[in-house]
Image: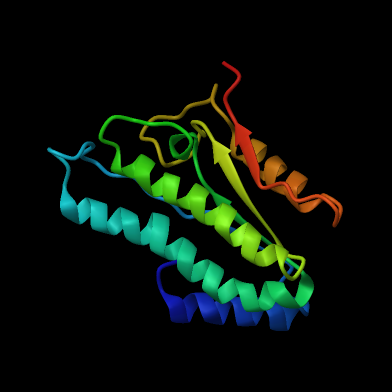
Length: 167
């Protein structure tokens, strides 16, 4: 997701194989080993910002020309952390960016009939965490949210879906 030329080639190959790109899901994200600002590791911040922010920008820049042709949909993974405040969390700040950017992108895409949605889950049982979280949100729950956003009629734009574990 952080290599523009590879992402551009993937989008072109997708359009060529399937005839168009109707939707793009920017689902990459990472955290840091050392949380906080005072004790945080600037190199970890750099790497996380590159994935959590720059990769989203790259994806949008390269996907928009394809999506414009189909009045398509850009979906991005935000987080509960992008809706709340967490003491000293640089990760949370990157997700705040994602939420704000998604709203701004939705406005830009609205001009030509496109849509943008941010999926904002709480804790999801993925490899992001060291230990399994079987009582938390499951990847299929996130997939269902994406399908819900994509399946809305042209008259409705779901800009955010906020999912929390039910435990």
